[in-house]
Image (tube, rainbow, N blue to C red; front, side, top):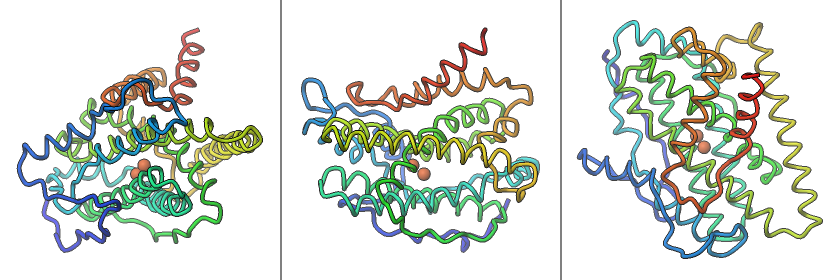
Length: 321
Ligand SMILES: [Fe+2]
Ligand SMILES: [Fe+2]
């Protein structure tokens, strides 16, 4: 398929913290950057206890060292056949995916602005910047394949940045966990051609890094706050889970009568990208397997997100019975 390269925009500012983007012209450089983004071990010795300086340094270092310097405009969107393109265009996820990245960007950048610690501030700011890059990648993909988007909403700065960061972080923990499984399923079923899967792969791995950073930030917060703040923090975390559960149920309900594209992609995605006969059990098992695989290359001493894997293991046990 031909497409107008003028549609491909790169309205990205430079990444924060002195990070640079490269053109990564040769396949070896690309492969090295890809490997580095998936494998990382701290040179700090001993355990990395959340709340310790060593843990904080390791988190910041992990996030910088695993930064993938790809430029969205060098992504060479593969030419798709008519049937492949039609399948892609009708996936009901594009609007919500672009909006989610836009909101995540501003929420993370706003929270980063409020942090005084330079290590956490730098990491969260870079995370926010990467969300902006995801949005650019998605916008370029949408333009390349002629997918129509609805009007974009405004992305206001949140009034309560920490709350917004908590909501965004836990939301990414849920969505990424399912995205790992759905992406693998789409790859296996041939829903996406292999070249498109490879092209999009770094974005999915980046979400894995994001929730790795978030899980360690949460653990460090818990370990360093006085007991009375801890109580408030835990109440906030509980409120976030209730809010996210309500939001997802709301999205699922809206699927019958809502606008055609504004749906929760996890709920609908499995049917769309699977072989047609994928059971919930198989999808959950695949999500777990992919979750373990994607985190396997990072230092074992860093915390991982635990809630979604735990809930899924419990659900699998119940379903087996
Ligand atoms: Fe993202
Ligand atoms: Fe993210």
